Image (tube, rainbow, N blue to C red; front, side, top):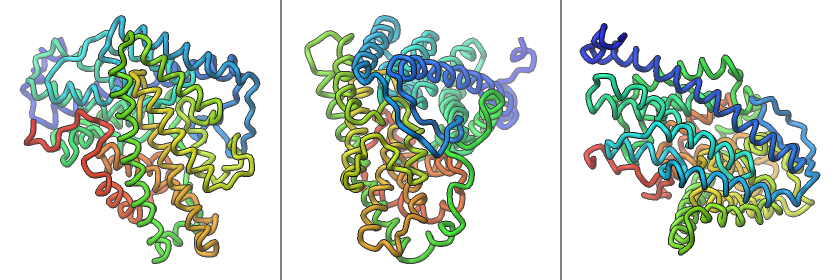
Length: 458
């Protein structure tokens, strides 16, 4: 009645999208709150009570920089991961097959093809992703919440008299609002909704409504959770804020861009290699995610860091506390971190590439943080005086945004999101060097295969 009375379809662009953006933001914000608490409850059930695992948490979610690893019942790791994948797969393929995999790509596909998202998608994705993440699958929250939010919003608006173009914009705005909410990064999330649709372009019509929706979503989410940056405030020390601009250190960021670009390509290639191989297997689709879960479980037995969202481990890496990682065992730090990167790539490929329901953003951030640490350790080995532990943090943060900025083909949005998540805005100028190199080296490869090249290709 509200829309019919005020004839919202006849309002000018800014008035219309101010109203719609506020409504989308409220829906996305509440959806993010519910999904956050659902994944937290699932992780607490499976990891804390079943495995006896005291997983680390980021500062913005109640975590601490001091951490001691405890895993009381290691033998429950494979049972939990495989069971979670089985139940999640049954829900997905029985009720909403379009919720398999990482949800952001499904929304991008709906945007470009103009296909509606069924109402049941939000419910099935909500439950299946919570189960997969909580039981120990290597997956993030961003893909599921993007699909949950887009499904809820588009179905609420489907009976409203809006143009086809307006309904397309609503899908993209829902992505930005949901991600901006759950990551507490309203500006980066808003740009992500406009940038992630294309490999080499940005959707200008989405920017204004996405900023409105993402900001409102952030306000709603923060009111229930908190408004703290995910990884704390002012992650950079006073020394690091100036040291990162010295010529030698900037050369280090160029090297980081090169290494990030290489690992970004490796991540995408491995992920879709396993996706194709598992999809081609002549077995029931219900068992394919469980088969992938077997691979994830084998890795998790050696590297429990790969389980779940993993932001607690990223927090420890940012702070330089890698000795807190349970399998460090005094090994060469360089070798350990190198192996850890591939462990996370493989675990994510098994968990989500097999058809499991979860996001790829959080795993990408974990990999990027590890790549940043790996690059720093290389440089520290060569010149410990210049590349001292005092500048470890900026390498980790820039590694996070370089790798996933390249794989997502949304470098501007990801850069701003990571800055919002770490409270380190001074890092942007040097970070853009590393991002640009990684983005260029990754070429046309993307983790979101439904992206179009440019707007003219629609």
